[in-house]
Length: 230
Image (tube, rainbow, N blue to C red; front, side, top):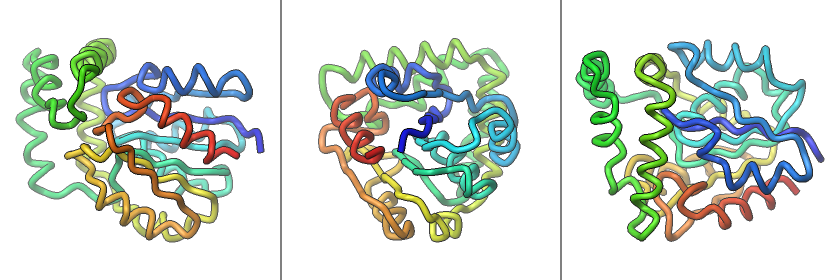
């Protein structure tokens, strides 16, 4: 199987989120990093992507990218040959979380995107260690590059996202469920739930990673992806 690999980055991230994995995997196959900031609903983001992506592909998404990946699978299950869900959440957003987004959105409208991102990507989302500040700097730079309008669209999309538990139950392709042990945003227990829902899945928990294992433990993330693609 040598289908193209499509990476979907998390909220306010771009292809740099997967730079180590893209560099390694692109030697032997087509690798695409698809942006997910062009619409204000998960359903529309997925529909727009389906008009641009190859006829069949292996699909890997992290965080919000995983949420979009599940919607792609729901809309076009026959086009997804493999599924990798990393540090993500299949559930609809809780009202309390949605309510907490509204002041963030107001702050971004007022020109405080960097402050909101710095507060949102708190160090406790990442594993402790020397690379933590370097990763946070990259996250802030990606957010500044994408800009406030993408933040607002993505926030709206997350608030209105559908529950995807039935999508996972119906999945007919090999799946990787990967997360960092230190991920406080999308904890290990939620990934165990996803692995249990998926009929053909492998759960990988990286012991020294938080919410962004592709940057925090790039070699270990790559190894898990290579095994998934075999």
